[in-house]
Image 1 (cartoon, rainbow, N blue to C red):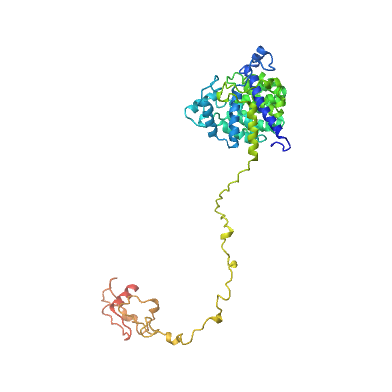
Image 2: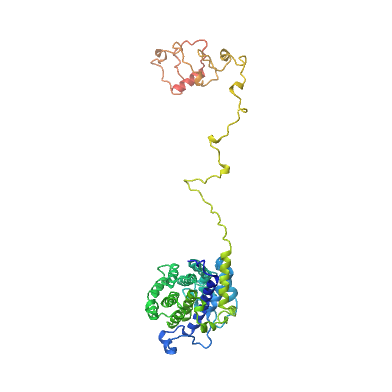
Length: 477
């Protein structure tokens, strides 16, 4: 929903001025009717059709919008809760208070928390975090983020994190997004849709918005009946005030005079509902749509609520926001930071080409001059190589000849290559080793053969010691 590239910059500035001047005009028109019933308004003034105060001026709605607008013009899209908290301390909490003592209940609760040393978002934990105090100062965020409702909603939520929670944040997001859409020239039905798109569908704010805008074609009484909870004491409830403002804007089809007067004559939190309706209609129709006699009454802020805002004018802040947005648009976008990708178990991170290991096919062949050919290898002289007969073991070799097994007294267990089958003449016959009947059966520790058995003849070259005989007996046991 970005502004048309063919729209001149003056037109965008005209809408910005219309939004913030429309907010201030609606605030001044609705202030006398705040917290009144429609019947009480009629009894006192009939139907309000213009200023009824002797010295019309904006209230806390206008001064807090100036405060948030100046903060946003300074930080732009880089705005953080820390920036907002520091500004609240510098310009409000740590200063002397004005006659309104910081304005509404949500602002009072926030200031008390900040003065106690609590930081955002804990500073927003008070009994009126659901109020319309954020919605009343949300229009500057739509002006800055013209044509970008989601960005406007994000920024106003950052601002609201110091003072609001839940439905209070939803109300601010809806107003900021609606103004951002109107700044791009969206029709009233699209403005309402943009507001609904940035709040949860099942929130109180969204349900109230849908009921109010659905009843808008039947007039202000139908809008009020669809939203207001009879007998509820708090008129600054964000879901109610925001819905009444959008209902008045939709009922007037974006016309500035009709939208603001509809909001004023419904009563309740009339200064805020008329300020929001005026910001929406002013962004839709531009500053020229605001009646001259109404616009002329709006001068620099008096600082009745925020002394630090004394002397600031809404038109100047509107220009600052447009300038800040244009500067941000010309600034080159930062290069995206590469994200480190952790490889999964099924995939390995690709190796850069510079360090890819070569495959066998990629190995560069060695030049022929490096590797000698088979013809170039010198042949070993026959005189160097021993004859096959010369390799036969001699008498001193460890390995015995095939036809002889030489076992020394220290050879407890001959190796496998040293064992050769013994001729049959060496082995005793079964009858020779059978013990005599009267012989005592040897115990496991006894050495075989039995002592009285005659030993067979053994060739002279076969040395059999007592130790070797015992070892073999143990192996065969």
